[in-house]
Amino acid sequence: MGLSAEQLKRSLDALAAIEPAFVAGLDRYGYPEPRLRDRGHVTLLRTIIGQQVSVSSANAIWSRLEQTVGANLDPPVLAAAPEEALRAAGLSRQKISYVKSLGQLIASGELDLLALPADDEEAIAALTRIKGIGRWSAEIYLLFAEARGDVWPAGDLAVQEEVGQLLGLPERPSEKMVRSLADRWRPHRGAAAIFTWHHYTRRLNAGKAEKAGKAPV
Image (tube, rainbow, N blue to C red; front, side, top):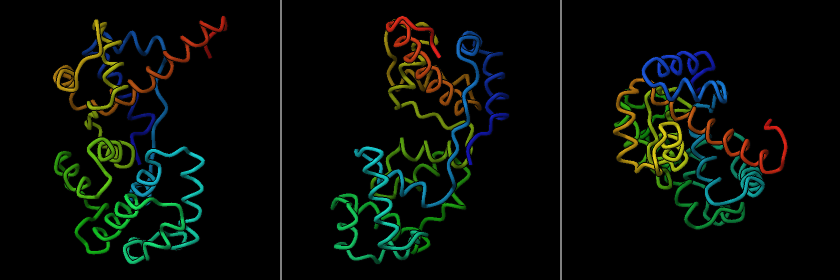
């Protein structure tokens, strides 16, 4: 599971002590809710299935996939499942290769999701061996499912946008600049990322409410 509410608060309070922008941000929108996912292949499988489709479509595919290979969606069964059956469940040819990659790596013992390397970069490298899991997806998994508190998804556009907003920059900073700016936030960059998403959503909602002439919720 990811960072708890208590862990987030502790980290954000530590960030506020070294970065005044977090003090102002917390005053505006408060502390974020935890973002929690289960450890293991099911979370990564949901990530793959949810790529580039609507939530309702992803849920429908998931339901058909459970009917096809079993509710546990065991990696060896996924690895051995006929492509025709996976296609009938609604998976594209590309996603079938992703699902089978996940199943094969786990079934063969090449990837153990319960014993990923302690070093974050090594863990990201292990996860990105799965077809369809890029750096961003690996970072999100480590942050939300493994509570790795210093994972910093600097390539995320919302993170970049809100770092710029929080720090009062004239334009959205680049990934390279965001990595540099956040270096002093170690080892709390994971909480910083979660706060940027929270701040981004609340800021947009406040803007919409203002345009509609309503008080922000």
